[in-house]
Amino acid sequence: MNKAPTARLDRLLSNLGYGSRREVQDLIKAGYVLLDGDAVIDGDERIALTPDLAARMTVEGEPLDPLPGLVLMMNKPIGVTCSHKEQGPLVYSLLPERWRARNPALSTVGRLDKDTSGLLLLTDDGALLHRIISPKANVSKRYDVTLDRPLRGDESQVFGAGTLMLDDEDKPLLPAQFEAASEKRGFLTITEGRYHQVRRMFAAIGNHVTALHRDRIGALALPDELAPGGYRVLGSAELARVFQSA
Image 1 (cartoon, rainbow, N blue to C red):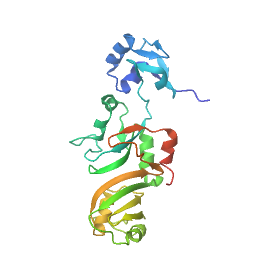
Image 2 (tube, rainbow, N blue to C red):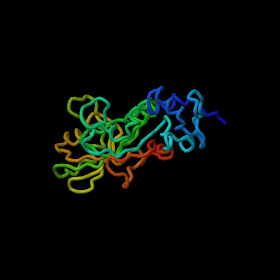
Image 3 (spheres, rainbow, N blue to C red):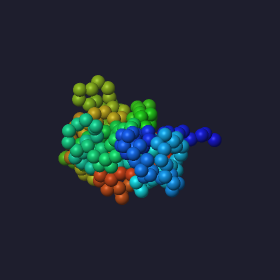
Image 4 (cartoon, one colour):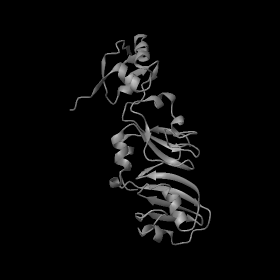
């Protein structure tokens, strides 16, 4: 059985965003950090980072925030941007303020543009992030697409051929799957992540996307009950579905 890693209590809490090392030390010495109901007053004490730690430790009467290795599922609303640097509302503003001070920082797994809503993953696990977005992973993403003009009828064949070229590019797109849902709506599944790819695909065949919503990554579907702007921690079984076929 592998032994759980450990971390100094003051460093753990500081990296989770509870404050500077000095602020965290003051918090600890004041008796506001409890483990199994007992105060831990030595910030130098090493704490085993077991999966149940968040259920066993409280800080100022509240359960400890999730440990590093956090993965979130969010229903990204329209109008927020997937960036740490751009101006305007950011997806990170939808999270608790303390979570925005975590180290390592939470980052989006890929991006949805400002005018696209739907399923977005965030994590502080850099290796996992790169595993998901790597072209070798071949992770599929499904989009609910609403269009300005009626479908031509040959979208499935055109997108599935693997020969469609986007403007200003010299490499054709990989085959994609398209399923019509109505005269001006359908579901497009892609395995690439080129810049504004879905919008540019329809522009290449003479149509214009008026609404775009991602509802699935791999076999992981966005739950109906997760409202726009809502988020929750993703469990390991759900995370595994990202790498499965729908």
